[in-house]
Image 1 (tube, rainbow, N blue to C red):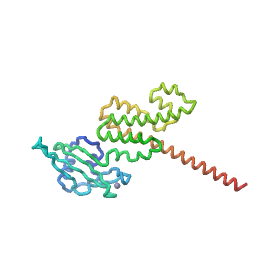
Image 2: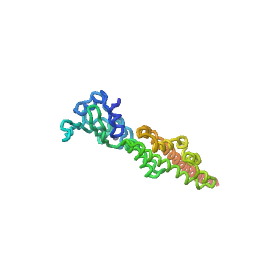
Image 3: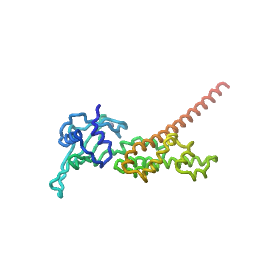
Image 4: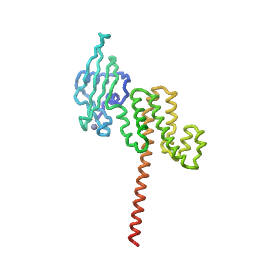
Length: 275
Ligand SMILES: [Zn+2]
């Protein structure tokens, strides 16, 4: 099913960014505003928080926008069209996706509201990592995505950086238990060098992408807001991949333990039988 690229972009972009309407965009918005049927396919492909997977959403009525004009006393001559765009999941009509837009200028619209939030759509699977990282750090990742959805770049970097710092500190606590670990050298090392010293205790993906921490730190102090916003998706995906590797490793160890004790029990049963 072909997606409506204009609506897809609108659905996935942060709030409060001005969207300059090109001709197709303008035609779509006008069709929505005027309760007219859309000619082209108007589906969008987003995560459904109820189905818990990607799903196709369609407007739940043809030409379904609720639109209106706000009359401002101070600007008697000016009317501001605004409206809600209502979509529902093609698997179940009760699964809705809503966007509120305002037409601030003839050719410019701004998305001023959305449900479910961008953070809910983009980090739906984080809860599965609750066995390997405290939930407040999972909340930090969601908060980072949420802030970036509101156009806050450097602020969202702070939360992601905190997650990496937690992973390092946690690995350090583990490493300290080993007498061979050189704590003195660790204490005087820079952050990225610390990561290398903790190599054995950290997921490979984190070591391979250790620059992610430097980028996050640089972002907090030196990068422009839009530079942060452009890279936040990649950085949160990197952290998610790190957590995935940790979860896989934990599950593998658990399976290994079950198999080991199973084999050991089976072995002693067979041994008892033969004696
Ligand atoms: Zn659904």
